[in-house]
Length: 313
Image (cartoon, rainbow, N blue to C red; front, side, top):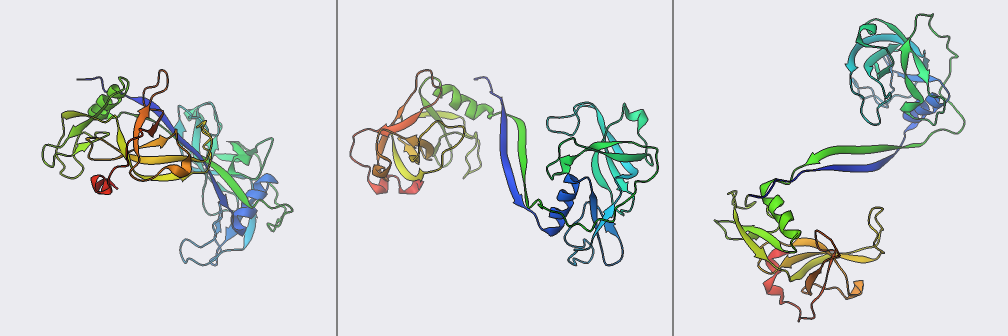
């Protein structure tokens, strides 16, 4: 049995969103070292502010300044900060009820250890040296034993309002392809393509999943397929990806390898993008030292008859 593989993977992308008037004022206020909440019809002040009352669903627009000082209502110690968290040394996650607010703001508290944190302790905002209109303009909270800060009575109107933010999203995880796909990857390193046959419906699945997605039964019989195949469907890519050194436009296609019961995807090369078509017969092209086909190119054979691949569209 081949070794089951595993590898660290990262999914990362920037998430861009526009801001409504309430969030725009809140983040612009942080840039200007002002903390704003929003007042509800029953007199509560919500921080962070929201655009609709969570109880009545009423639209909220009455902005009110609150103090950058407050009280810890609950907390948890973070022994091992992760990448992108507010502090690089151990810290406490805290809910802070700012003076003048009725709800808690979640952020980091810079403290020497868990023994220095307690519910009810007084804290204040530590502002970031450089601020752009984001929650990170609050670098963290810090212990504070002074008087409550004086307010300016700010109404939430600023010059050069922040109207949008870019929030990076990232997921780090370790992926294991399992027994079936480990064998598939190992065969690719030998420039072969191996699938698994379902003992019930007899379809050969490439890449194999270890079980038939139609019948739900385990698969173990290995079947070598290809290397040639047929283009079933395709698309023309016109947007260049940052991590691919491929000039656009290019074609990405579903390819039914000979003997397979499922089409896999691959890039089509060796032919103008506007000459690619359904039924085109192709073969893999391997780069030097490559562990999988770099792309597929035309074989020069006549196009496959539609009836031979229509079930794999």
